[in-house]
Length: 252
Ligand code: MN
Image 1: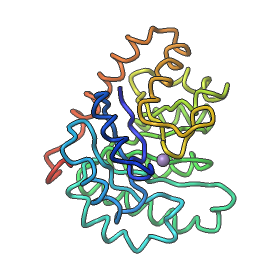
Image 2: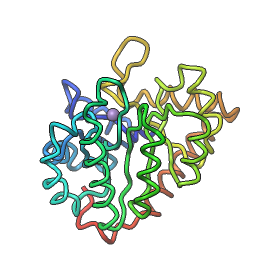
Image 3: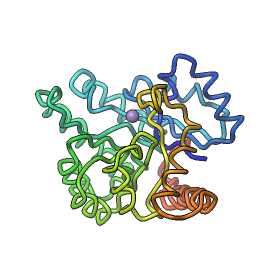
Image 4: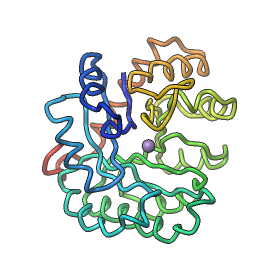
């Protein structure tokens, strides 16, 4: 199975979690929240064929870490995946909005001039603003909106802009989340957990909990689980073959 957005380096026991991911044959994209965390996070998953580390600067940390954009630019040639990036319009982060926009726009421009990247994007309470920037930065790569919680109109706009969606168990608990997933074309979907931040019931989510998302997607779409799994693997293959790897110096 596929967990296309989790934070392996933030589990209290990352090595054990990684070992279990390998044993289970999971494909995992481990996102980072700061450029300075990326090298260590990459080292952690070195040798794990199906696990990759994404270079990110989380919107919630943009105001504290914007000085790391220089490091981001220096590392980008070696990174095939970018995230977690994006914007967060939550009330407690409003006063840092300008810094968030500066960081997000900078990263999109950098991805564009690097020839495009697969990007995993945070858009909580900020979907229209995220889409506006993606539209302006056409060529930045393939955007995957993680844990989408916007409206139905914006969902259509996102699809028109070429966005994909990664869907986790937490998102499928609510009626609203399920209604959104019902409208997402199966060929634009991947699964995620957002562990260890997200929970399943009242425990921390682990990458293998994507099985729960697969079961819910199957239910929402009225298609059996095996067919959903096949479609997700096919999506991952298509996503990775459609992005330019010739511009990436290495693919850690
Ligand atoms: Mn996350």
